[in-house]
Image (cartoon, rainbow, N blue to C red; front, side):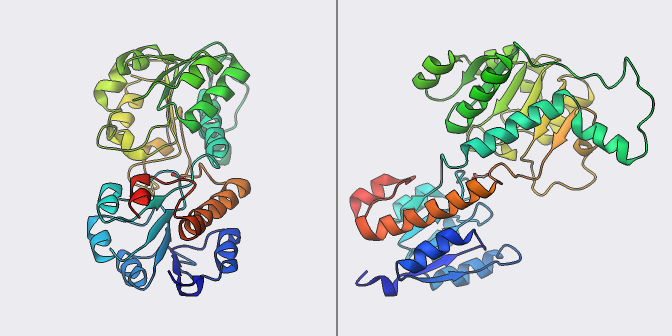
Length: 332
Ligand code: GLV
């Protein structure tokens, strides 16, 4: 790039202003699209053809076809920590660095996992609905009973930054024992939280609350299926705040209906958005939120800032704070 003036940045959705302002302060030519709804695949493609840098969201499909049509892109910066919408290996082959926004949303997302756990254990959403249906009757000593969380075992599937924050909350509030299953050992969490690595089967068998914090990949797609739920305790609560594709929704509904497991709390579904007649919305021991893990003022501002800073750093220094394929930066 000879001057910042010529850097054309396409922002695919109306994100918090802080990132847009940072990009404009650098003198970049910034176009913000998708003010009222996400761009269609074709709108995205046409707009990206005119851009040098792309600041995109998880709802944008940055697949092989798109990347081959847009191999001129110099950098892609995702406004999210998850990146299953982006074909990173193809971007790498084409020499396009891809950034994302980890860390800044870990507290916000862990709060949603923790909140869903309590909501399920005490049937918050279901009981709220009974009131709106005019069904708040007399005090019933043996009805609507929840289960307590103190001293229970938390199983974390994918003990990264968000999983660690969830474990901190569970240990701090309820003295829960922490076990986890991840591709890699998390030595830091083992030290700090006395977390114990277990096999996937052990995680299923021993968890009272099993919280999913992994990425969605070929390895994790649908891993929580009928067989997995069948190995869990009938008193267990399943929480997923990562990606809906990690669980099989039909199998989860079946596991709840047959009381194979006790309850489930989801911030992510498959597909999204969830249909309004989905049985999970009416079950006593289920709680569903519309993918709002990072939905706080603080987290969204920080995501906007970091997504912009990744682009700025790329043009200024040839590096990025958070790059998913740093080998590309070395090649440049
Ligand atoms: C949200 O789901 C994210 O990946 O940031």
